[in-house]
Image 1 (cartoon, helix red, strand yellow):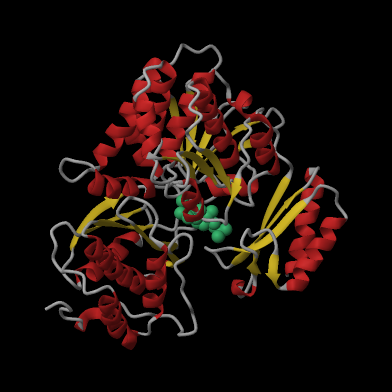
Image 2: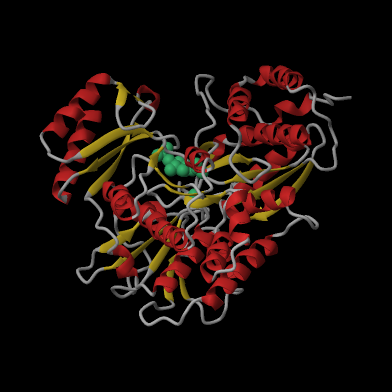
Length: 524
Ligand code: 16G
Ligand code: ZN
């Protein structure tokens, strides 16, 4: 029978007071791990349904990224390796919020709405991956039980970075050969890296020494696997934060927000290049210690600009004028990065709301587009036309561009592959990390997290740069801005934590700090 036995749908009971509403946010469902089991179970069912309707492999990633160890989350990866399609987010939100005794009815209604997708198709499978969080083990089981409700195939892919699972799902559905493995990931990125590396000229200023902060997460073992396959003299990596408490005083989010060197970097000397992952290795930022002990941060905006310069230079050299090109940013992008794009690269950035799906969606409209959030999450997307055009060009610049475009994980922002791209581009230009930092100077900015009881009280305009509710708070912000020439600030509710974020930018750091603090007071 189609519907099978639904007796065990209630195995993972919601343990929350009924008034809690969960929504499939920018990062799927994310909660304290104690509350996640029934969510994982239902998401397992939903992923199996998505696999059945598409007849393809679907991914479920268990991670709470840069959040503390005690949190966890689940998100679904679509057949092409990208984020879950929007209409399915609605299905997910509805099903997770169903009360225990409504779940079976909800399931039947959804199956009917989707024309009873077939059970047991050999091509439908759910691939599950998890980061290093201890709770990931039992949440994997919960997903498996959910997938099993209608006997859809299930494969536990074990510990993976988030982008690795995206890569596997994409490869499963789109590449010939048997089921892809984690080794295919390393082979893919290391071999394109080597091909491009072999074509670059010897360097005078670029140095191979690189420190990596692994945020005590899954990036540590996986980057070691990848590094082992790179040409021996390409990078000399010193790994930090491999075993300690996940994301604690380290990782991309910590460094970006605090503008401090992570714990474990005390002995690193000034001016050495340092890369930083987050807990599931989909974000990357860089920094170096300055002589005065502070750090110079090279965030997602700086990475975007470095990659954008490489692409613009190559497209110009090859005169590929019929290739549409774009850079996509959010309101958190540093004002001076956007200015550099306009003035030095002649590209006016497109602005979209926070969350990778929005950036990715906008980027996909172009033949080649670079998108990055300031927090370090981003990648480059390409159309078929982009590759078709390049394939016909014999020039060295075309070969370089093609190889670079394979080093990049086009389906999702990926700290490891972004790192390879950055290192190759620095090598190509023979730049030090200081040369890169000097592309533009960040406008002084400050970000503050303000804990709130109910973040749904705050609603913004689509571009997230001003509040619709509470309107009087926006009036206060406008008043504070009027006092400061050239300043910019906004408040937006987090999609992942019970906080609102205050962002302020001004001519001086002192002004930015003051402005942010004054807004923080107004929020409280
Ligand atoms: C999630 C998003 C990230 C976004 C962040 C914003 C994905 C895969 N991740 O981590 O892109 O920057 O949320 O967090 O979309 P916030 O809503 O707490 O500011
Ligand atoms: Zn992450």
